[in-house]
Length: 264
Image (cartoon, helix red, strand yellow):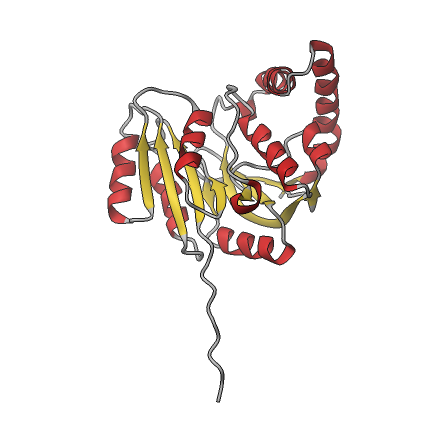
């Protein structure tokens, strides 16, 4: 007679979405989460005082799925504050992020959590595809590095925020710093530091990053400005030390990072 097998419940994954005037996208974002083959998740949407009807759409989504929770802010505080607010109330063993205009592959969580458990890693990320404002692929893939050390992440942000997952049971909850841009870089740098191990990359296209007109991703001048501030204000380096590390960043950005960007 065959012995019954014990079933280990899936760990809970908290998915964090800051929401600000993204009425065009929030339903598709939520649908990509609800389509996950991995079912044990909670989706925490923090509306950052939207003025375009985003909040009512989010509340409608929550009324149809008990796993979706909406937190409202009375004043606009920015994405970092919204993510931190969601992190405070998150109950998951794992914490993941998906901005309101981005999307996930249906097997994203299933493959990534299995990958993390198999390799006993506290921080992971995946490859992803860039899409345009209408959701059409732009023919560009950002390939995940197989592994990522603290020193390597210090030179450049190699983790797409929409792909990253950390095991809060091992690292504790991590808050993003109150800086206008590059909070995600700071968060993943801290996650790797706390894990005392390299982060591991799953080299599959499991997320879709939307390039919107006027976004920082498309504005290289702004990118340089905010990266200097990352070293100077967040890491509290001197002006000269920040300028030195900005130079390292630019070398990495133009000569190393392109090796992981593939056109198809």
